[in-house]
Length: 437
Image 1 (cartoon, one colour):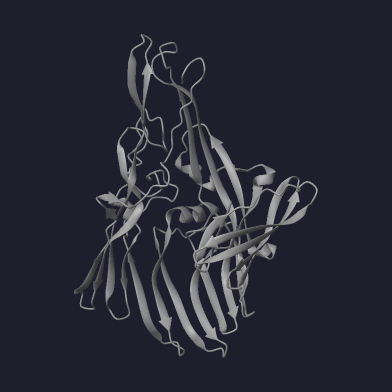
Image 2: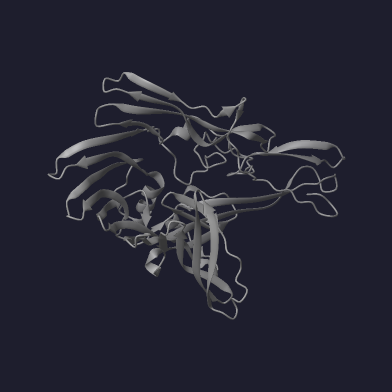
């Protein structure tokens, strides 16, 4: 399954498996799909090796005669490598720092995969060409944890009272990405240039190098005169360590978030003409791989671990079993809180935009609510979560007088219009033929 996102179009598609891949080492696959008010013809060039099919580049044509070329060379493809490690006990803080761990790559065929094909050029129906140029950087993701805990308990009293611990595994993984940064867009009417500066909240894979953030964006016409000059002003949420060691670099990436504080627009003579400033909820966020999150990954009020905690990354579970005397019992395996928090979900969220005129817009949020509610592992009804949505937007003048209020409602006949695609499934039950576990 492939996903696409360019211009104002996005969606997904797939190709049928190529039947002659063992005898024909290269081929083209085609798909025709509908998107909004047009259709797209997608052609993928592939080659086959050892039974695996690899997409090299894509060509997409729309109904208006425009052609889009993606991944025309290896320099226009994003590659990702995955590294894994396994523990038999809950990870400690040091385990969540890559520098202190011993990770191994996944099996060779899956070690490096192409995860994105970038737009190379657009050829318009009038045969004009728009070209895109990139630079590549290699970055690490933070370590993620997958908790795999299995408990066995008797369906009747032949095994003994209560659950029996079968095994606990904690699978740790991170990725190394060859990420592309857009540098230049060239077209008949001029050129767009994007300049970058160093950033601290993402860890570069090469010692001595820094990941990048957008610093300047400039637009020039075909006469080489400035149309737009924009400076992006940033700060960090979290404390920056003056990186001395590789571990310091990684801690910066774990603890800090980059914030866009403002955009400054400049005139041709260099004079700052306009400022747009942004404000945020500055309550401190935990490390990026914190386990104190709700079902959807948003920060919540995660309680401290208890002594007899069964799960350290997943919610508690109620189970029924029969004791040795054949009496049905009920008990709970303790876990972590996965309920959403309206307070902590807003940490780091945009709260206000101030305009060059002195006026501003303030944003008020509420948790998403879905009409197709579900029951969690303790049989409690869950109907809110999955991030935030706008509740009110307040427009204020340069004297702080409220000039308008826009209120958003998401219910019809008292039921939320939100639909949860799938319930977060964190528990599986398996039954043997002779006894139930």
